[in-house]
Length: 382
Image (cartoon, rainbow, N blue to C red; front, side, top):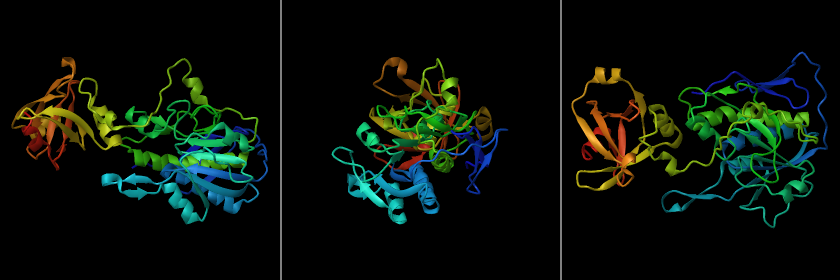
């Protein structure tokens, strides 16, 4: 599981560090041998909070709690969410976004919209806060709010701009990540001024961390960064950039973090390492490939678990048979792969991949059939 004690980030106003203890849910200032300056003061904030998922819920709750204890800072709080999504078989079930459920529990005024078109801000709103919202906040809306807009983004901007930074941090095997507080840009997503950011080298990503675990780690840190930023008056112009990551990435091509799709789970037998295979299963839930069965039919095989195996695993558990699979038929000849598979006697299988590494798979699902032991499925494809 992902755990952390203290996370620090630079304050925009006075260069002291904000230290947040996730376990104790407390924040304290640690002076960098400098006197602490007084935060800039704005008029009481009347916030429109735009959110959707669990990551944004942490920020909404933190802003709500600050509103309850500091009316001089936050006078009012409205929430904007997207309409419910259709889920399940035949898409018959409507599911509200988590942020709406939380807003209802907190008794907040809710605006449910799928677009900003022909819609005006609630009266007297002077700050828009968008966290993992999904809709671009247009210039017209930002100009209507005296202090524009803020966003909490779970990456070290400008690295991993886009809607899925947590997914891509894991997919790319990053050792560290972080959180950035930025202004909302009126032209593009994630191009605002970075007002606060996790200091270098960032927050360590624990080995084996899942998307949900990393989200749970970063969400309260981002929420505290947002609240502390409001206390410090970072929303008040002129804005001061503190994005150290931009300097580190100077003269390097920036990595984007687009939404992950089913196509991201299609196994690339020629390029994937064993570690990447396992990371993709961890992030996407499953990966898949095509294979030809004994009847000459091309079927999709779905791998829902995987771990890196070693030669020692082969030596300890032994093997009884080997299969050769024709994978990815229909592709260019160089993209095909004939895989050697070793039966591990317990229903699991070790697949030898082109990189020379080994992948241990216990269960495989053939399209149209229930999940079964890996060797049982693969025997019909030799």
